[in-house]
Image (cartoon, rainbow, N blue to C red):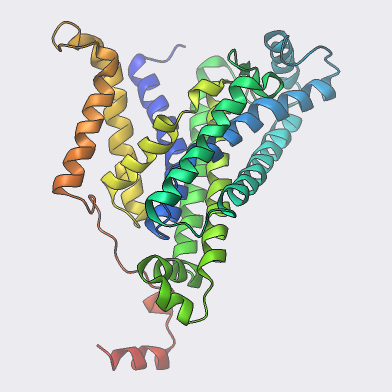
Length: 352
């Protein structure tokens, strides 16, 4: 039975929301909690997508004994792989999770390579430098054809090929939401740990943190590596979800500026705010794209620019009237109050 357009709309909304939650949580670690203006977030996201587009298909083709050039005969080879995956579900999932691990590793290494030589820069200088690194992934993808097919792109094998068509996107969306929840829990645990407190101390007063024996440079590099690994997982999941990858799709607007807008709407250094800001943004953009044809002839410009103009206006309004976002940063407790030892609780009471 075919799914209704409203159900398809909701399923796709949740899938895109889950992917952006993963990317935005990683950006919030960098910018919200550590104060690193990573304008090169697309570097990690694109790298994860390129891993998903180049690694699992070649592994599957080798296991299935499918011969041919993976790039020039991509559509034929991937279609044969999907048929083979119907009878090899376990191998499909094993390679899928292996791909996510490889994507995280590649993302982490790129985070190290892009941050190590420039991490001592501050503010606008660091942001522009990381932006330049981010642009490199699209240029490489477009010009190095053996990676992801250049300007033509490639198809990505479907680990859920054994499911009927009407269940495939539902199952994929549930999987994306589950992984997004896991990333959210990890992020919450990290910011409530001593590491999270150190990151905020570095963000608020680096000199004081250094005087207390902390190493701001190493801490920044580590958080960029962790965040890049998480963002790369988001990029790989997006490639698996849409079933194809092309370098043009990984531009700085979609995978750097939009994530910044989402976390600014929700509130920096607040993971719940990230969820709220991401949902508001994704919902508004989906609605604009879904209904923008109705504005044809009403607005004095091509409707293709409608979502960019409206979302840009939202960003300006947020920065003018609610610069702290919808949900303001709140202090977090490393040890939950209910678990504090009685003596520690009495000592804290003396300072209240």
